[in-house]
Image 1 (cartoon, chains in turn purple, cyan):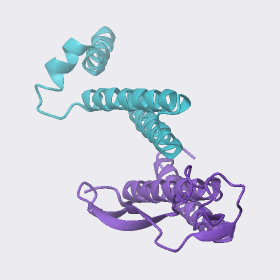
Image 2: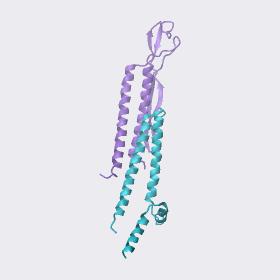
Image 3: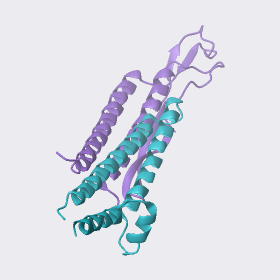
Image 4: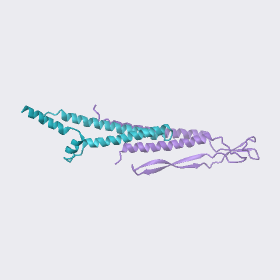
Length: 139
Length: 103
C-alpha cells in the first residue's frame, strides 16, 4: 500500500506541473499579443488555449492531472487600419492576433492561485510526514 | 568463583558484539531477522535516495528539470535520511538499554 501522504505529494506535483504549463501558454499569448504576419494580408499569431485531463496513476491508484491539449483559439482576428504596416493588405487593413491581454491577465491570476493551492497541499503533507517521523525522536 | 563470574559477563559481551562474523554466527543461526542487517540495507537505500536528490538539484541548477521535481527529490531524500536517523537512534538506545541491564 502506498502512503496516502506520499501520494498527495505526487498528486500536488502533477497540479504544479499542469499549472506551470498553463502559465507558459499565457506568457506566450501575452508576448505575442501584437505579433502580425510577415507578408501582406497574412494571418497573425493565433491565441493558444489549454485544457486539462485527469489520468489514473496506477502506481498510487489516484487520478493525476495532465495537460490534455494545447489548442488554437478560433475567435476572429482583430482588424486595424494601418497602411504603413508591412502586414497590411491592399486595403491597408492589418490582422492582429485574437489575444485579449486583459483575459490573459485574469487567466494568469487564476493559474497563480491554483498553483499556490497545490503548493499548500504539498507543504501540508510534507509537514505531516515530517511530524510523524519525528514521533520516533526522543522528546 | 569471582573470576568465573567475570568471564561469564565477558561471554555475554562477546555474543552482543556486532562483528560480521559474530552476526552470521548468532543472529542468523537463531533464525531471527537481523535488525542490524535491515538497518544497514535501509541506510544503503537512503544513501541512494540522497544521491538522487543531489543529482536532481544539479540538473535543476542547469535548468534541465522543473523546480518542483528538484524540490520533491531533495525533500524525499531529507525525509528518508531523517527517518533512518530516527530509527538508528532507537536501535542504538535499545542496545544501550540492554548493556545497562542488571546481570
